[in-house]
Length: 210
Image (tube, rainbow, N blue to C red; front, side, top):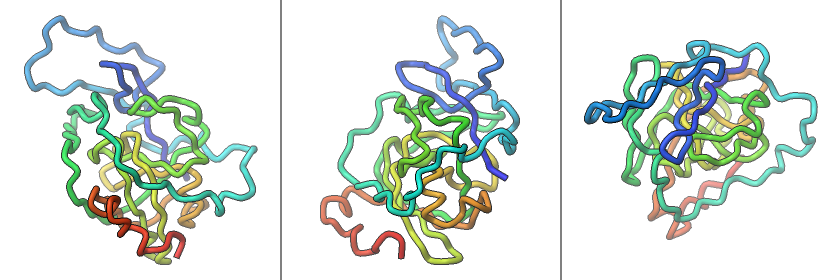
């Protein structure tokens, strides 16, 4: 089974979390209530999409796709604003602080391939990217398969997943390299790569794929 997160809407010059494309967004209020995050509606409550998957045209060398190369990037101007999904409020971090979490990772595929992410970039399921509910966009994280110890580095440029038991949504390529694509999910540890680690090159000490 494959977890997919919900489609996107354009707002404030950027893409907020993926929302229901079959409905119409609520009209923008002239003066929104102070400090009230925007509301978004998930298409299927964050469940599995039976019509999502890797598709038929899968490159044969995904294991050879290089990890994302961490670099200093400015935070997105709009994609880190507070938002709400399924009645739950999310407040993305706007400071590049250390972060570590363990939980279930999922991945999303062809259903969103070629669509805009929350940062306004085009989602490429064969690139080393990921979605996270609150990490700053963009961010770089190391994701480690707890069962095998294999790790990859991905660039976080999207929002999701929104199921309570999921910590990160990976691209198909990242899930393949981690060895969880076939199962659909897997237990992982997520650790943010800090600016200090990027500047010093310390993140290279842990070799990807080991």
